[in-house]
Image 1 (tube, one colour):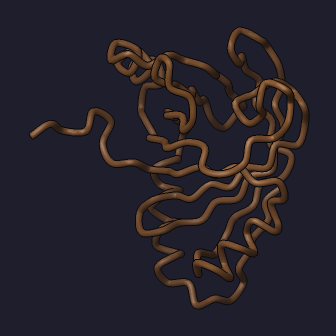
Image 2: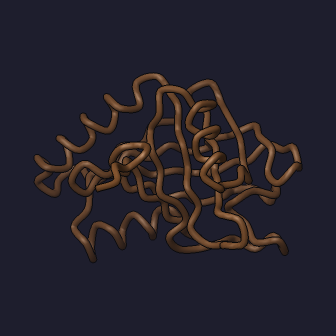
Length: 172
């Protein structure tokens, strides 16, 4: 039996056109919550060789031990969140793993045939998105950030205990 190279999946990411409506849908239709919202997140990075600052609003919740991330891109900078013509991509976007060493994870994934399409960072996190050659669609993300694993454990516990009250906490 082959073991997963990076451990269990930590996150599933979705792109939405309106973060507040997206959160409301996840709560009403799927019962997923509570949500932590981060407004005006920025990442300095390089997408397919083009440098830029990507801005977004992000919401996080949990299903079991898996973090659900909703992202609404808020600027038109070329990024993995937009089509080549600049229109927003919507729907399931990526699966992700939290890693201790981003460079090592990217090197191992690259050795297995994945190509980096986006590398970015801010003071809290470093990320890389990769894709298989010739296959577009869902990307694979690696995330390195202090306290990320602890945040996922605490968030998953909060979701298991959630009684439906106080569905949204906004940070920033």
